[in-house]
Image 1 (cartoon, rainbow, N blue to C red):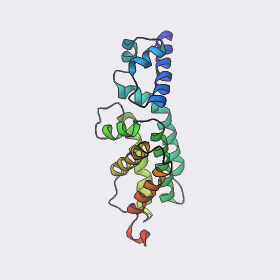
Image 2 (spheres, helix red, strand yellow):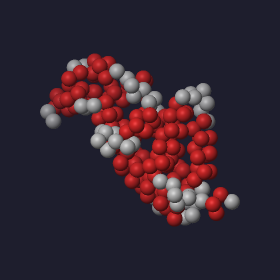
Image 3 (cartoon, rainbow, N blue to C red):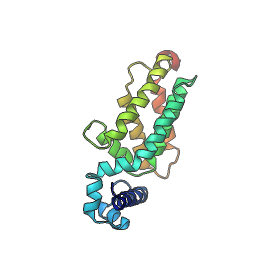
Image 4 (cartoon, rainbow, N blue to C red):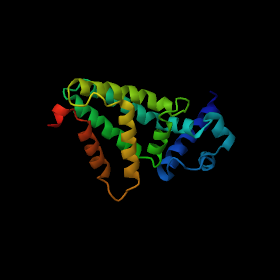
Length: 186
């Protein structure tokens, strides 16, 4: 990439990050381009779709979540490791209004640019989930796809209730109680 194209790319990314944080993932891409000092065509040359831009914006956070899953993978308490990681996901999704909704809609669309984020996240979560299942703490019929959808749904519910900062944690706790294996639940 030429130096000027690289600068444009970085400016668009920085402005998108700010716009998504301030206005949610539905922020105007025209405003993002204008604030970055580029035309809308330049934005679309670098990021052909909104999901492509979102994927680039959130890649750093995804990398952090993936690194944390690797740190938790050898935990002596696999169920606690899974819970910690799921809480991290809810926190991340809550940082940008609309992100949980977009992740939910893109979860089954492998052609979406957001799949670049969700595919490795599902693999990381699968490793943590399998360890929790093998320890007997989580029911064997729980799938990572369902668990990720539930996690995003919790983040979405919390987004809709900004006056209740404890809602996400309460809902996650309630969900996790339903995941427990029969022997772990008694």
